[in-house]
Image (cartoon, rainbow, N blue to C red; front, side, top):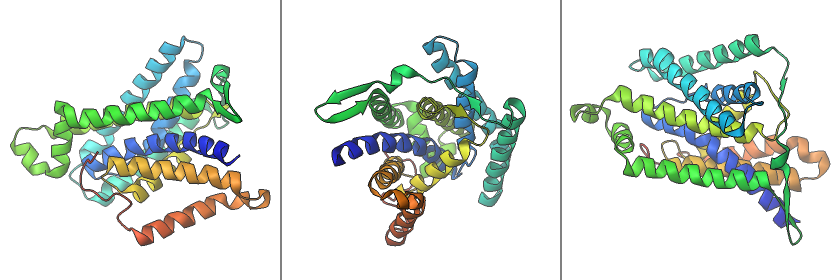
Length: 290
């Protein structure tokens, strides 16, 4: 029974780990905690609704394109004009942008949640001995591993990845050697948008509806996961997100029924304890570390 709980928790933890990566990447490059990141995932959910009658490859490609375009517009129209402003100004900008996107979605799609057609083929269960492993769990874990490895290779082996890491280490020096900050930051938002689109497809594939407020819980998970993992460390972000998801699922599985309503409170109490012991996070780092 406990092994079944662990398998289920690994699936949730993998999804949470993926949630934190996009948020942590933008923070590493700009020092910006983008609280509108959850709204990118929400936009991906609505894109899935609009494309649900299309072939699966059109749905995937369309969702990625929609989220990446909004992410790029976000960088160009909202964050680039205030890039040289104070950290507080950029933080307020991210909050304002998150509220704007929420209300825009509310106007466009209505205040009530929009139903999302279930992907029945994802609910298939594989039986291994006494264990049940869903196809969705396998897809989530494998997608997270592939995305994390691809991101690590991109940052270490490609030209744009090297420029991203150089910009986080020393912005002024990177400019002197010819690295264009606008291009580098735009690239970070593209990557963040791709990750948000993947999260949207995994997150909403097992849910029955999408709401204009769907992004709120996602950005909270990503933010807390990134903080306890260690801001500036991609490994730390993924680790923090994974531990958030794993612990939350295990709490809901192991707590007595009458105490499960306190699962969130217990989880965030654990987070506070972790930060008291390691204020810089589990994997403290400067810049984009993989």
